[in-house]
Image: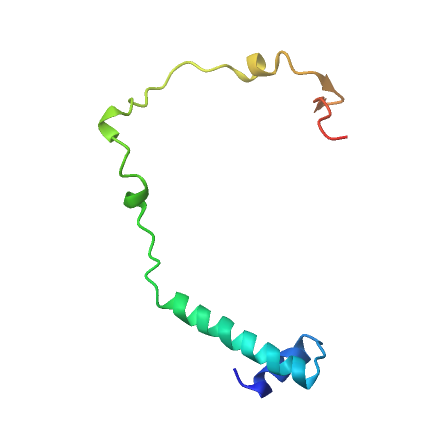
Length: 92
């Protein structure tokens, strides 16, 4: 990264640096840009089969629909006040 680009970025960010600080910052920014260029060259394509190769799909149960509770049954124990559900306070 050249010093003029760095000065422009500092101006956009409303940052003020002395010439010595700009020189040090230039070296750091050059290292960061080089690191990002190195990361760009890596093969980072995600392979979801590599994460799940230990799952045996022949041992997974079938998805069979079964009876579930109605809305009335689910809400029968809920405390309601003014149309809102009252829950215990968890944060003090």
